[in-house]
Length: 93
Image (cartoon, rainbow, N blue to C red; front, side, top):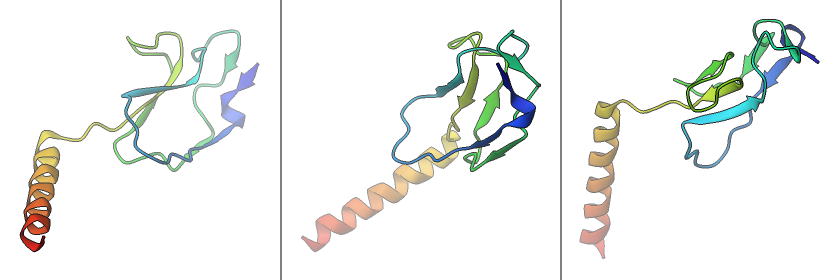
């Protein structure tokens, strides 16, 4: 049994994350295995990410890290900067 209120979650996320959701615990808050309502603290949670303590449609009955999804405007800006950098590289070559 885990008492979330006594646990500190330290995230060490590296590399490219390709999924929208990552299961932290395969049991939801309120189940016989999980007590407390949330972690005592969460460190290094990526900007825009969140933790769902009672499961999602994709991962019901789990505690889930929901990854940040870039806004369309941010994604368009990133693509524009990438295209400019690609043109610069092609012009130099």
